[in-house]
Amino acid sequence: MKKAATHLIVLAFSLLMLIFLILLVWNQVLAQPMNLPNSIPQVVVRPPAEPPKWLVDFSSYEDPMNPTKKIRVITVVDPESKHIVVYHEDLATGQVKLLSARNIQNDLLLDQFNALSPTPSEIEIEKNMRQFKNQNH
Image (cartoon, rainbow, N blue to C red):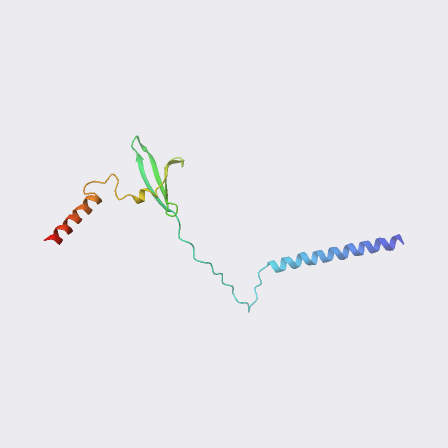
């Protein structure tokens, strides 16, 4: 009786192992690409990449205090949030240092700041004076 039960357990275990191996091999077969002669090639269509949201500018110069030291200025502008950030990168070491950051939203509202003559307001006044003279003559 014990011998029959042992054979039954071994048979059941062997059957489970066989099913497991079949499933394992089947998954491997399904994971492999099928190279059938009449198969249709698949085309992957990707949506166009979004344009970058940030504007980045790189410019390099020599440090006036140390002409052998080359520095890159990295300027990043985010038009959506109206922020500008400026970094200095030491080209010899690769070290990047934040130099300045600010919200420029209110700066963009200014008509003039630190402007040389003729300023935009002086030009506007001159234009208005000419129009007034032309209308009255």
